[in-house]
Image (cartoon, rainbow over the protein chains, first blue to last red):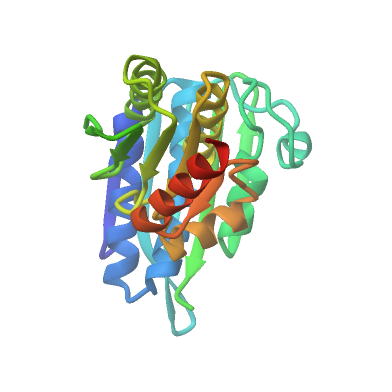
Amino acid sequence: MENEINVPIASDHDVVVARHKGRGLATELGFSASDSTLVATAISELARNIVLYAGRGEIVLRTTHNSNRPGVMVVARDKGPGIASIEQALRDGYSTSGSLGLGLPGVRRLVDEFEIVSEVGQGTTVTVRKWKG
Amino acid sequence: MEVPILKQGDILIATVQAALTDSDLLQLRRALVEKVVKARARGIIIDLTAMDVMDSFASRTLREMAHMIRLRGAETVIVGIQPDVAFAMVQLGLSMGGVTTALDLEEGLEYLHRRFTRMS
């Protein structure tokens, strides 16, 4: 893989580092400023979920291709408590941490592709892709 | 990254100068809520021109801060949210609730001065 950046996530400072690197990668690929901001915002939400729910984990940033369009792939991975009901977690207004609860449904609206795999007691992996517009 | 807070008459101006972490945001909230009373401020302007991302935590913290400041008798105006940042906020489903916003520092100051004139 030509471009893979691994950002360990364990604190709110790492959240800023991860979104900064994500924006850099998107800009490098020729994303508009607006789309780069969407990528950075999605990373910010995903990385914060790691800190909030799992304590630590990682964000992996990769360049990817869809026929002739470049894209950014973000993998947010943790070995935290996992999500019991993904369906519920993807509903607007749902949160178990007393926070705003817009996390995952909001992130899904910011990107083109969104996948989530989670197992209680094993952890959560969210993979999102955004293609160059 | 601490946010400098300047006093101009009865207005406090906090200018965010780089991306803020969650703890930076909480620290800013603490400092402003304290300073409102100490400085006997009636208006607060938070300039977000340099803020790279407004995610759910940042907008919630700023919204709560504005409400706390209102309870202390002063009004907050958020200025300088960049167009790309605003677009992402809307996509994410975030709003600033009932918090007043203005284009930039100049318009924020104008708004507060108009309010103060009307009130006195």
